[in-house]
Length: 233
Image 1 (cartoon, one colour):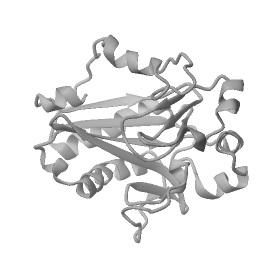
Image 2 (image 1 turned 90 degrees about the horizontal axis):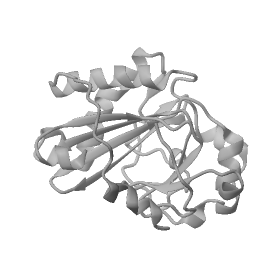
Image 3 (image 1 turned 60 degrees about the vertical axis):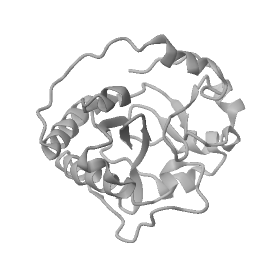
């Protein structure tokens, strides 16, 4: 997506894992999670190219958007989050999500929770004061990639076991945006709203098979600490 965006072709991608799959932030220490528990439960542990901390993906919606670095939305890190959420928030509200932004959200935190959804920064959407949507971005090769993880369910016991915290702590911090929603239907409505905000006409395309050099990195402990084969959808 970054390569296509650098060539002048914006694109969006909807993703979901039947899961569960645990995804670490780009620079996150794998010791933040119980790798032995992940191994025992056959839960893959992967790393993404964007920063932040860990997310357990299980039937939730992932929405990614790639734009050329010269695009007006890409002018700054904070402004990109703002414009992205300006389109994402009403799309989720139209689907029945009572999402809102924290008016006094800090832009950064000196000490980050190992669980992405415990940090309420300016890139967050909340439901009842609990985080339901987290975003991250990467900038490289003349393009920017911004993506959101939208919780559609919550297994507090699993979060607690893998991150070695109490399930009660998880329930106090996290909440589904639209519990039980179909990720494909929701994703398509988000894509339509995002395209409208960008002044683009959405067009569904089937991407080519991912080139081998992109797959190969997940044979390395840096990107897949457990070396567990993974299959996404």
